[in-house]
Length: 245
Image 1 (cartoon, rainbow, N blue to C red):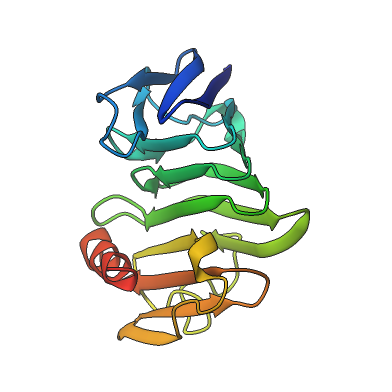
Image 2 (cartoon, rainbow, N blue to C red):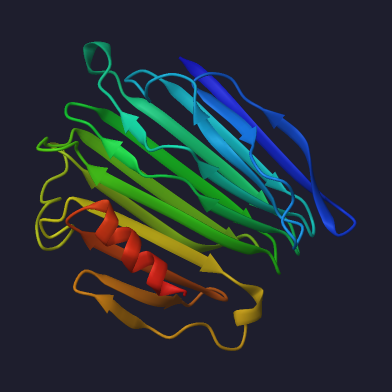
């Protein structure tokens, strides 16, 4: 199955207006709340079918105009499932945020079911003075299940220069993924990237957030990255929530 979802937000005075909100199964996009007091608009991703299934080719395009504020969430986790003949599923996410714009990308986690083969690629382009909150989480298999193959690739560029490039692979084809150099036996992991123009002079300092979690400032801009590994999603989410409280 091939499907594309598009979300475009523009500033309309002190408020944000959605000028494009288009989707097709299995990715459906719905506006789910009135405008917040600060003008932010919130939408949710809704699963219109099971998946992603092996063989699916999915794409999400998000554009935030100058001064616009958008938050993207999801109503449930995504469950990567095997398809016929071991075909790979892919999800490509391309987001752009103009100067003075703000994007908060806060979906629910990806669950890598047994025997799946899934690739998720994210590319975010930020103009100077753009703000970003970007969360990605992965759960390795369902209850008492070993995960299939899942790869997450994320690139964030600020003013055309790479701010963050991070890859993670788990599953049978990823040698050593459960070892101490990667997840250390954890079953869930997550990252939370925050880019804030107000941090130009003093971004958050590096800090240990727990046994498997830390926050690190990034050298390429007013940004910091929190990462966490834990026994389950609850443990990971709690650590990420503390990172920028």
